[in-house]
Length: 603
Image (cartoon, rainbow, N blue to C red; front, side, top):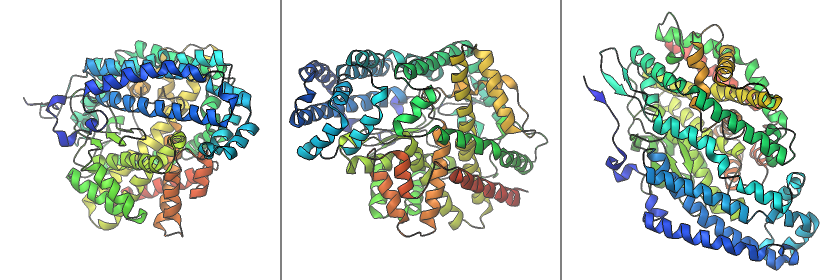
């Protein structure tokens, strides 16, 4: 009986690893840089109490903090890379923990900045930006500072809040280590008796097998491994919620939701409009479950049938071909975008793609101004792997363009905009492939399968998790019980509404879904932005594909803007209003068209 198992990290070929050496040539170089930043932190106090002395000194201070920020960011990127590609690497784990500690020390050392700037006053700061050329670009920075005035505390309290950064990472860090290093999922068994080792980086591939026995086995073992630690994970989740509540109160926000939205000038309506529109359109999802059950010729339909392949022989897509197709799909954005993206995905080794043992689940783009925008993923030679690559390259190109066109203070963009860029790439690629493979039933089914998988995650699971996240925060604020049972029952209840009468499920195995999103539910109301992001992405992609005058240029300007504008303003200029439910409705229209395609091809 053959056991299929991913390779160890040390066996991964260099071309399938990201280029960590471009950040630090060796771990010893990282250590030297770490010690230098630690020493430099002690010199910050020479500015304390002096920022009001004048624009020249303030410019010196901002140059100092920018230098510290760049150096620390490189340390964090390097530590992040090794930590997330091998959860069993204890040296990497220690390096990652030390970096979190340094982040807290950095926040504490610089904590006097905001109270002192607020004491100077926005009017004076704006005058200084006109007098000192090195401050000329800080108009939006001052606007944000003024907006945050009511949520900024004294220097002493700001120092204390800064020092909490490291201990407040404990809940998510422990949950992540449990899920990625401690859980033993065992081996799933297929219909022939062959065993397949389950890891975070291979589980999704097993769940998308045409073998229903294997899918059921993988789904059951994965859920049960989390259920075995449900009480510990629920305690960690509640800790994370309490931390959010504490920080919201400490900064005088009305609620944790307001604390997540207000710094980006996002009104609560953005969140609530999404949830209301999502619930109103759930019948489209119910229609999809029926269509897929019929396409698979099943008498009953379960959660482990949702990722089942629609085509009998899914197309095999090598990595290099996927990069080429994506480049062709993105041609409306111009040569520069395409050439940078291709070079990053191939020659410059932005992408760490081997699904080695110990690799963390999922995929992400990371980096900072001064490094490459790196991507972690577990590549599969299929449409799904290609789609994930397109998604993460959307993030990475967003970072590349923002870093190339903005000063340090605006080099980071809002998470609210981030998921627009990633889903835009997927929408463009999908449209291109539907066009060139028109009439190819196998490829069209594979594309529908990929599209619905993406929509399921971002337009079904994430809004459901957003509803869960809001409710658990409200419960903890009221002092209600939030243990494993309560979390499981709530999660199952929300999925039951989404599944309707079309999906048969076991309460505990669906209800433990929250424990499987440890990188998301600790990110403080991040998950809803996947759904607003996919909505903005499809609206903007339609503008570009329809050939609207200047649509491609306006989209590229959105990416180049980085954090120099509030996200709703930047998106509105690009051509989409996410304060309105209209883009979400428009994207449910795209979903409905995909279901109709399946009903036509799969019947």
